[in-house]
Length: 191
Image (cartoon, rainbow, N blue to C red):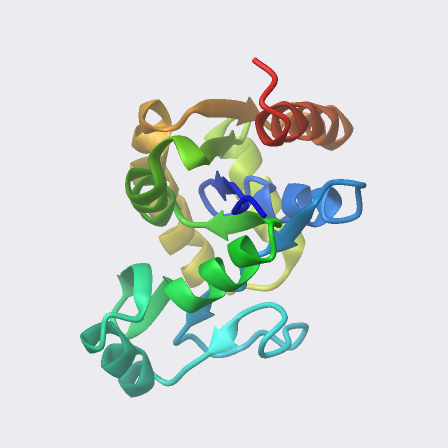
């Protein structure tokens, strides 16, 4: 059996990457979601092992030291995100394609590691103003956190050229269709 390929979605927070990834998982595509690990506190809507593997900052650091991560980043002090190698290989060994929802640095690092076996897709908001509206509309973060995310988004937008494909999420239904086509073509080796 052939090992699965990797499809990486990265974007500034609030660009819609998670919504697009969730949509793709409802389609008839042989995709399986790679659950990331994080040391941040779960949001009230999140479940350990489904949305993230929630680890304490100390557990996360121990797993970094033992080389368990494909990629990881300390996004804010003691707030880590990362991709466990065992999670990726578990999915690939079944012949399924691995679907990622990761930050831009993680996306670039996974692409570097897997090369042509990976497709990196950068989801871009139509504007920074639209991004701010989306973040406020989710009602999951304080104004202080939203301002931090916007500052980080400006930095993250500079990573766009490092991705294989850029998907501008202006209208979600259009973005869904575009994502389906790009992923379908990649996993089926259609140029």
